[in-house]
Image (cartoon, rainbow, N blue to C red):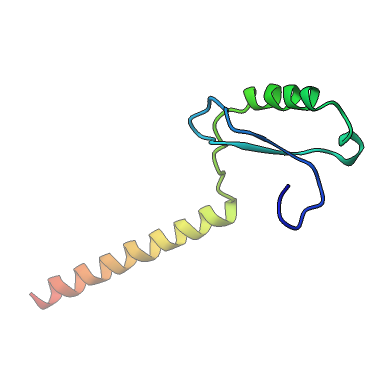
Length: 88
């Protein structure tokens, strides 16, 4: 059981996956009285299908923000170059 949670938790530690050390399954209340071996086999079956974590996709807003930052840095570099060439 997890602290403060009033549910049955099933922990699978042998994931055979380089990305995950262990997986916690929270059993639905209607299946708490189910056979433990059946719950464990179902959890292991689900754990075998787990692959690497999905890549985080960047939102359009985040891409725009990065593009604006890049443009500002590019403009600042151009201004500094012009100033240094004018002084020299």
